[in-house]
Length: 141
Image 1: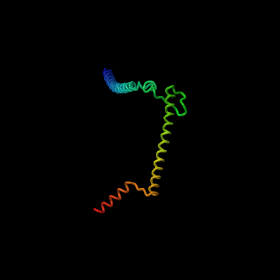
Image 2: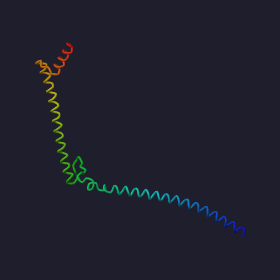
Image 3: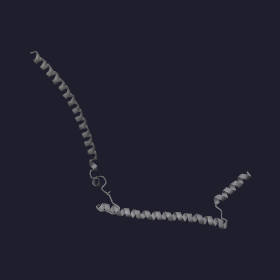
Image 4: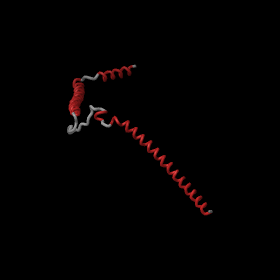
């Protein structure tokens, strides 16, 4: 009987050790499962937040569409309209740019012309005259 008791005690120790091991493993797996669930819930929440952006051409701003520079191969009617407006805007920009260049050139021409007249006819700028008068007055005081 003594041998049977030893086996029972040994079996209880072995079962207890494996029970503790299995319990620890289940606890780790449970923690891992809980973290995975939290992660999944967070991703689902983010997915719900991004739902309105699933189809941006219809949900976000339907009036804006992609237009390529070569032309609108697959653009819709609004895209072609937008492309026409962009072409008009580029043309107007070129006109404005040309006008600005002409203005700058005319200002430079006017300055040169004024300088030439000043030299040729002895016409002096009012500011220069004022500064000369102020210097003379300061010397006299």
